[in-house]
Length: 278
Image (cartoon, rainbow, N blue to C red):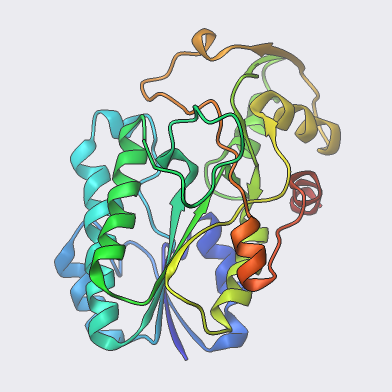
């Protein structure tokens, strides 16, 4: 099997190079080889490589910058997945695509189901939702995997930001009224490899670590486990940390559909954090 992996140098893409390798030939495409902002680049790469499976890890993930760069966010997160899906359908290939908890507004008190109506409150979420809709409209055999609060030991993410800030700041003020499930790139990649190895129906599934916490709780867990400086943590509210893009207060996603359909369950978020840090 030939697997085209976009965003191969990113957090999830890097881990997928390891977990997908036993399934076939990995065609790892970074931005220099396949620019998702360019439909021509996508068409050229896919038609030259003719993969059996496309795993799209690439995305415009600058949540705050997307508010001032909506066209760039839409090009990568909405238009590009549609082009990939059309090419996948033409080739008879499967397509696995990643989406986000930010397609929801965060007003639901409990965990979000795949059947809950999306209502994004920022441009990043809107662009990712449009990407989901483009895949659904394409007729390609596809999986949309919504995940949340992704981190790893590479790239830009909350874990690395905390560890870096701790080197120079004795006190960190962390938002404590947004809830979600920190999900490691390693755990995602392990699960996706299991999915890719079997027949799967087209559809949308939530894929996050088990349990939930706040950003403050995540930061506290990081410093309880990571070596190095341990700053004092101060819990604050969302209004005390204004950002250009609004964030949903509840980003918890139910993984019941994934477990029922495939028997796949990601580890608890604290166990995944310990594994990443080790």
